[in-house]
Image (cartoon, rainbow over all chains, first blue to last red; front, side, top):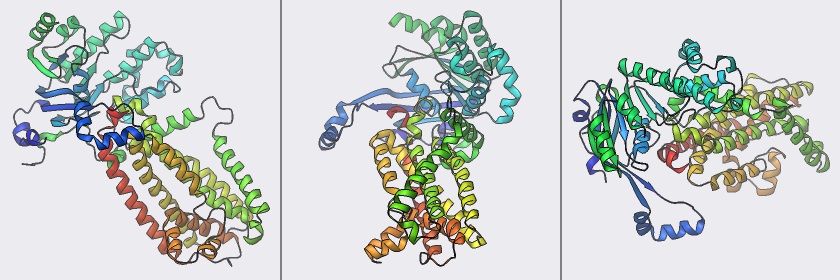
Length: 259
Length: 287
């Protein structure tokens, strides 16, 4: 189990000074255990070996790649191919079973927009709370508060409780906070489908700005045209394995030809 | 082979535990504020509820135990005696109970964004502290009416009692909060502990009644080994004893028992943190 993880770390990390993310021979398994009544637990303990084999689901198998500063990488694949799991491993929400994930610098994971928002707090309070959750200090949020509100275009509702917001307003504010965190690594999971078209264009422009400023970006999306336009590199996953890792057009073409 | 990571690379999701929480004090502050706001949202009485609940509890116990069972005849200033114990146990119950539920309760966040997850039990503890201090103010006001004149040593006993409950409930909260993610039975088990907690420490009765009943053998040692017994007795020594004529017997070796309880609480905290870190990697997929 641990034999493949025993890679000399200095050999891993010394290669390229611009590297931000190293995913090295990562395997992730999920144990599917739906209920845990006492009876089932006893049965499971008695027949441990057999059960644990039949109930495992391998989400990622031996996945390796590196991502450098300023790279924009699209993770492609069908539902259940392991894209979101990979993103969660990079953000640290989950841990790999085998292999290693290493990152340098701070990460903002937009795994889901507005995950840290609370409906009973006002927009202003949520900006501060979510900013702090995404790793900003009080001074940083103070400094960027006006930009965040301006970007979201909902200034007149900023002191209203978020539960009264329309879903579009909510997503605008949440996205706005996230893109103002200025992380070294920006992880985006299927969120560019939010908002109306002008706002989407604005989001894409902001993402291009982050990219131009040298931040590493990893984007999961099913919108192939959009990612082909936004990213340079594509990693295509199928059944938890990397099928293509190369220029985004190749990955998109392969994806279209396969599915 | 195991060289230090060059160039500042880290494995995401492996934080420094409670030490990380110290670095993110601002977020703890906001989480506490959120918790307080949300809890009293749409409530007319608001924060007043945190006074009303212990007040009602106090009145019930005062009449049931003090008047009907007659303890107020045996213990001077029984009202102050009773309330100083209740304050300690309430603090413990709220900190421990809420910390146990904090990870599951913040599941949406735990699943989506990586944060040092110890933040949530710590925020629960802090909310409990916010509710604890107003009760202490009420307690001191009551004590002053009864002629409370504490010495520095007695005030120190109160601080030690507070430290014991804080460390003990955070340790247990981390332990059961982590276990609760995998087995929701933990919540119910904790409710059971909290129900018993009021009765297995000398809150509603005097400690000599325990030695009269079970002697001073191993059972009594076990009784004294409960950090809550030490904390409650330290609170009595701080808030109640100086309000009386100081003729009641103080628990022998109270200082040592208090320090022992603090040590035990620190061990529980280490155990809690170790268990929490062990289970931490599974939180996102179990919730």
